[in-house]
Image 1 (cartoon, rainbow, N blue to C red):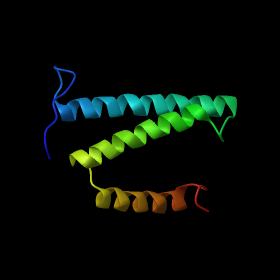
Image 2: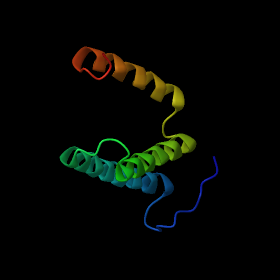
Image 3: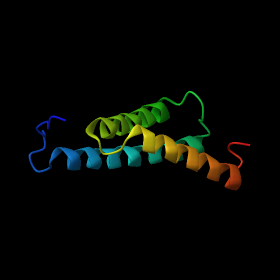
Length: 91
């Protein structure tokens, strides 16, 4: 994969990608917390925005080869099995 120059001259591409992903995850955490406090679960624009931003960063990680779809799909299945055992989300 072609290495793209970073706008941030202090960080290489992969580091910048992971830093922004961390920041987006933090913003999603805040949006989830506010959705709970305000009881705004559905049609929540801020939650949609932040989840979309996190998904974008995951897609960029996949494109860059930091994670791959097969391993992520395997992990999703493993997590669903745990949720079946330890939560009511999938029952």
